[in-house]
Image 1 (cartoon, rainbow, N blue to C red):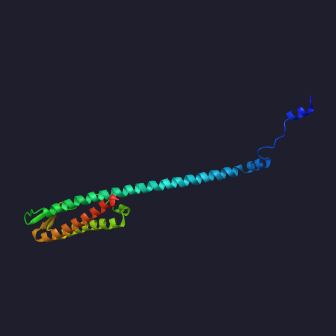
Image 2: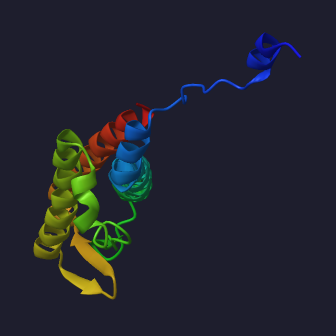
Image 3: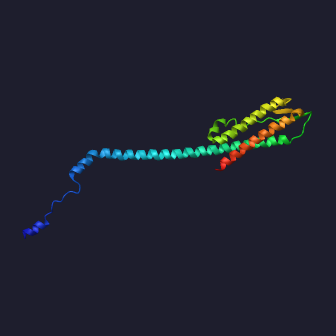
Length: 185
């Protein structure tokens, strides 16, 4: 046999793909590397969850705002209809007009929610609520008495009655218009 042929079949020692010093370094700092990658993952997850929570809160607030607008507009619309019906009523019996008191259904309970509205909306809504309350007080002063939940307005106070009722109806109409316009955007 040819000795040169044996040399060709002898496996050569190859250089390792990764140096042993690099492997040693990776083994020593693998906990640190895993910690850095894990911490970056936690930070990313927290930021993503915070973004989703913020978006969900914004959606819920917008829904509550729209609901509040619709409830107030519906209630004000009913008050306006009643006030306009009272203005058209000309049935003065025994020198008195019997007028029902305004019984606020939702607006009293929703006072704490008014902060959801825009500033301009708050102004007109509060003006409407103050007008309703003022009208109730005024009717109590000009009435000749009460029967249950009704005021007895004397014929001599009909001009005052028409003035306060139409003024309150106008304030309610303005609030309804503002709430409906804001709800469209």
